[in-house]
Image 1: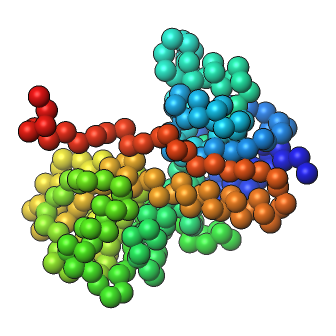
Image 2 (image 1 turned 180 degrees about the vertical axis):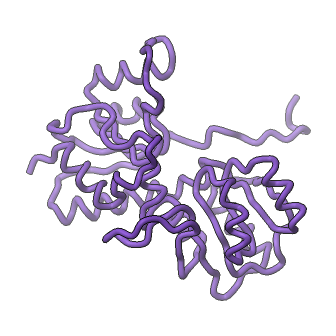
Length: 275
């Protein structure tokens, strides 16, 4: 059967209902034609020119990203800017762009679940519960347990592996033993106090604000900033797996690729290595 963009949208709406998105967000089909035939799909975190070039090289005419390619209302499209060049190239080559942003943050089996599962946490519940839907428990962040508990060094070893990072920023002290972890993939500084209230031994998220770090320090509570990319990238292979399962169930003759070019936008430079 010919798979059209609207079939992919319906599948994504089942996995992470678009109705869960925040009012200020922009999700769904942002560029493209709902009736267009899908050749293959490329999944990435950020809608940038590198990802678009990768889609063209792979022959994929549909891209699914977490972050939206159009976020704020457009007043101009200047094609000499990165954003304008991206839109021009996508439209020229008839590439369909779909975003699953805060709907995937809030969804059951979403961004925070993927991070929690990658770490090996069990008995997951939403950190800040949302609305109940047929797809399962929704809400921001997750609270879960290690059974048996992990030592601090064992947890940090696992964390570096999952985040694909060599360094993280920590406010407070990593506990000697860790059983209960609260986390939120992506920007989640505002949930740190809730994590402590709900009995977590530490809180993992990204873009932790200065005053939140000071609060953690004074409360002797551990807050770890694992970076925005690091804490969100576990959702990509998980989303690819879910989409492949749906393709098989619906007998869709589709290849669903995971980006091989998009990497963390930050690198760590040690002062002794910068000359």
